[in-house]
Amino acid sequence: MCNDQDEPKTVIKALFLHALFVGLSAIIEMVTIGILQGSSSPRLGPWKSEGEC
Image (tube, rainbow, N blue to C red; front, side):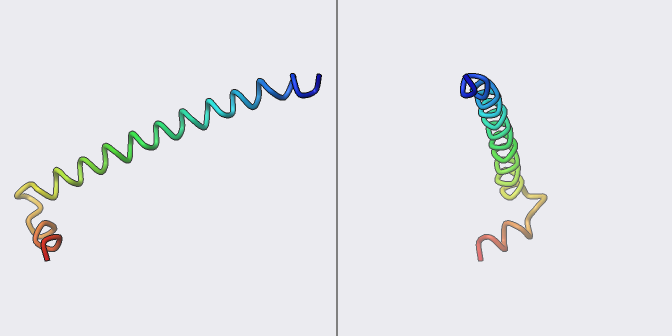
């Protein structure tokens, strides 16, 4: 019976961690895309030239 009481908490914790992971990966993806788009834009010319070196 103790296991039955612990199980919902484990499921909630797993769902929370999953949501947190998905949120973090989405933020990282947005930042990465922003950096890639920014490095190819003329405004950040020095960064682009450093990358090409």
